[in-house]
Length: 71
Image 1 (cartoon, rainbow, N blue to C red):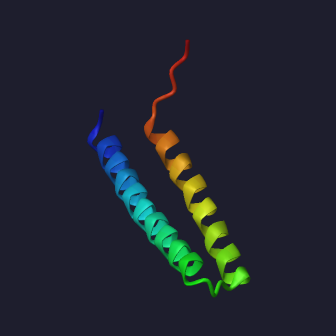
Image 2 (image 1 turned 90 degrees about the horizontal axis):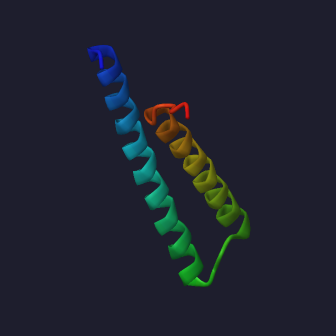
């Protein structure tokens, strides 16, 4: 693995960690909204949509770290 590839993978891992942190934060925010009983359905829907987008982006970046194996 070249130094450039190592740096790229390090950057991708850092981005994944950042996105996972944001995803966990949104999860906490969603739970807090649901527990209060006074839920703003529009805000809740937006938060859930953002969580799904983050999950998709995390999966995309994780796929870039996994080498393609030709069987």
